[in-house]
Image 1 (cartoon, rainbow, N blue to C red):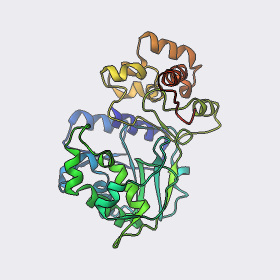
Image 2 (spheres, rainbow, N blue to C red):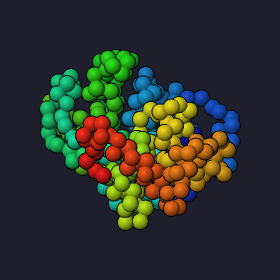
Image 3 (cartoon, rainbow, N blue to C red):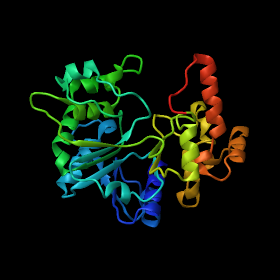
Image 4 (spheres, rainbow, N blue to C red):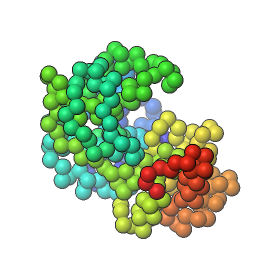
Amino acid sequence: MGAKLLALSLEKHCRDFTLFLGVLEENADFSDWLRRHAPHVVLVRLHAFIRGASLKHVKPVLILELFSRGITDVTWLDTDLIVLRNLEPLLEPLDNQTLLVAQDMDYDFQFHEKLLQHYRLTPSRKLEYCVNTCVLRATTQHAALMEKYQAFLLDPFFLEQQGKSESEKLPEFAFEQKILELLVSSEGEEWRPEYTVKFIPEGSGIIQELGVTTYGLRDRLLNGLGFNKPWFAHIPGAVKPWDSNTRSRYYRGASVYSSFAENYKDQMEEDMSWANSSGASSRIARFLYFGKPHWMGWAHCLAGKLWRFLRTGTIRRRA
């Protein structure tokens, strides 16, 4: 579902691109759909070059594989992204030394002592934001970084942590993006990062919609009025709007991602009822959004923030 929406949104907004889509096995129906709707997609069989890497942490493996094929500038995109406009103005001005990543919500950046100790690194620079690798642009100038990234993800202790339950797992080792964040902010005897790190700002540049409250009211207003023009809508986390479970029912019909996904329902050839739920919550959201996708679910967002404040006395910094 996500791969189709990513491919269709790229086809709509970007003129000159190739989307290399990693797959585990051939799927005749999907390949036929791509030929009809997304001609710029090239399927790449993962098992041919996976080299023992965890499929969950395959980003540096795929990027290095494309470097080996002679491609010098690669942008990884998670398959839970929808592209909202032409990416050329975002990517074209970047020089070869600049690493582009997304801002990860509004968490404060901090060095994690357990990560530093395990990988024998020391802090070298404090980043402006936390890293989210749902978007990761790298060039061959970053090949050494990608190789180190891959090596750290294949570290036996890191892999051991991935096999544990959420309650047992050390939080510093829970996400692969924390490893990249570590590598661009810390140094060691044989490692010194000298890269420029540019962030796509949360809210105004990339919508991080983890439930209805994480896309703030201020950004919804400004984006809906056209003062900001985000590049992407992203659904972080394990639960997606198309999942049939209680955790997604609350917000999928009021989701900004879902409202953008609806633009592609005629091409998807999939059940898209999740993007236009018939429940009362969804009907309220659609009555109040005034035809602007960024305003979908603003009332749910406000109610969620008020409920959180009443329960905990806290509210997310960015309203």
